[in-house]
Image (cartoon, rainbow, N blue to C red; front, side):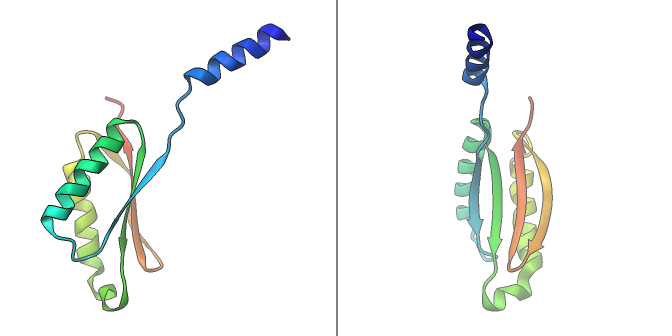
Length: 105
């Protein structure tokens, strides 16, 4: 019994819990702001965390859903060397969400 608990405790020490970090954008996010948040996302992914990129649409922003999708695809393209797209951009209410997970390499 003691040995079994000891092995379980040792296994727990070595496991890494994956956390999800969220980045929020608006459809009219500027290029510099996108670059800044891309650097943060790169740090999160290199640290082994998943990144949830969200574009929030308010009011008339709902007319520009394609802008939001292009923004998320640009983010994925900028991070393709350290991540892979887990879920493609899709609308959930007034938000467009995309999940990125760290690549194995």
